[in-house]
Length: 429
Image (cartoon, one colour):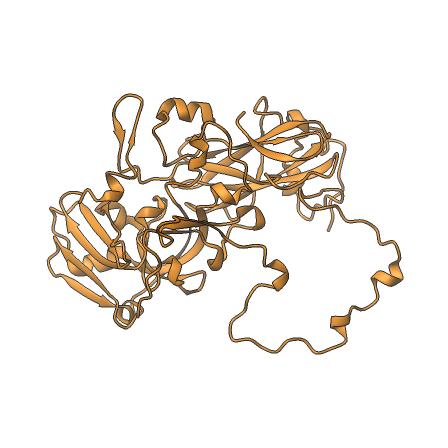
């Protein structure tokens, strides 16, 4: 069923040609003229008979079965980009190409990575998870024993605390979106609720902190509040329906909904209950920031609301005046995204975008907005508001509040400048 467009539907609801989000909310609505940045619009065939002629692959048997499916060779360009330390190539990151993906689920093979000393090759038959410290009965679990416990599945984003840190630079970095905002991904994580394991061990009432440690060469360890782990953390064994891949923490990963990536310890091997944090390197020398007041931010676990326009975005191209779809992703560690607003005039006016269902807690939310671009230079922005009322800040406000000694938790509004030729660049506006 197709719903006809009316003149009211095509009337701008904000400056810069933003149209009403109901264009994407009406059941079965088709925007016949809508285009996507970076892709030319459909054109009528020059010679219908030639275009309908059967191609060569219709005249021979296809490829045989394979034991594990892989992407088409024609999609080989869709891959993670890698940034590694030249002197220590096992220390670095790989970014998710957010601008190349749709929906809210990140394929496991494109989930971002952050490694401090490479990916360990762990034999699951030898791996153990130990719970000890302030407990009545220390426990040790094999992977097979954990597989017998009741499990839960959650659609959860994980974002590195250092994601988007190029935003602190004096000049806007010019890369495709995923190349500096791609240390965030969203998966279905399945595993054993940590509360079940802690209850089995018996928690000493004096315990308030948990020291989590990974089995990598860096012996990654962080301090975490026990209350949060009892609330909704899981020991994950599966990602997107299959066993977690090695770079994402195989065979066990701690998943803490809404908390920064470093706390979601990969290759999990030890959980020690204590009365105080261990003050590890990643909560003192790192992930702690000096503020303009002279005080420092520490244990800033929770990810604050953030949104990114994935299309149109840097490296893509506008193909002249037309109706386009502005689309992007929003998320927050504080629960659900309540709304996302879009501006097509540099923030002078805003209109509410359509949120694609499902809108889940601590999960990616896809937003969409119809836009009638007139071909003139402009600046696109988006800002997210979460269910607590927190609003994603402008860059100027964030820098004023946090100063220039920061590196982590950059969540300022992202601005894309579009020139009269349709070229798109990252701007501060």
